[in-house]
Length: 234
Image (cartoon, rainbow, N blue to C red; front, side):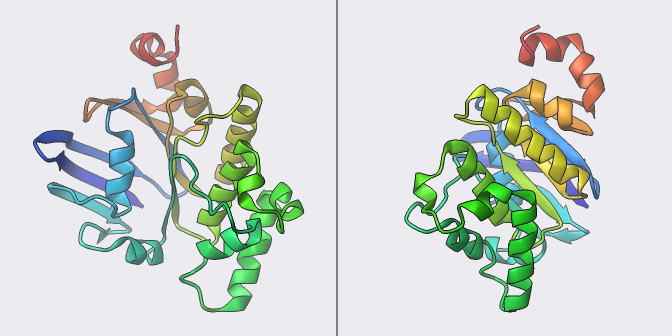
């Protein structure tokens, strides 16, 4: 479904991504793990059109995304849950969700999307008239994820969904991610909590200073001594 080929990205003179290649197949949950500054968020921003690559290709179902603006990429079936959630604090939960469906004109489709999101996140339905800025961090993460699902995307990019959450909420968020995956949603997950990410993923890539250092089944990487020492605290 998603294929990245020899992707290079620069910030001025800084070579942030150095010829990385990765794939995400339909229905997979693939994690991209690595330390701060490794290039994980840069990878997602380049895929979703927020950054322009120096060279390489980003293909979604064979279509090159590199020259498409972000709003067109959304229409092509890709959604992005940003790092830090970025909900519209002064709008209600339901208004935030409807903003996720801004490219849809058919109100019946929007209503169906709302019901689908409320099925995944019943707490959002309970709080649908509450201002998003008054939600807890975990609830805001649910809202940001639900907003991304409003277009029924082919693939969802998730950037650091556990950031800033308590250990209890981290477990809840990863349980939700696993449930979404089991429902058939394709996910590319960027996450510093490597232990949790590998536990829910099919496959994973290890990104180090802009290069893919390791890749393989998530279970195999979780058992690899190099990964355990570098990222799992073992």
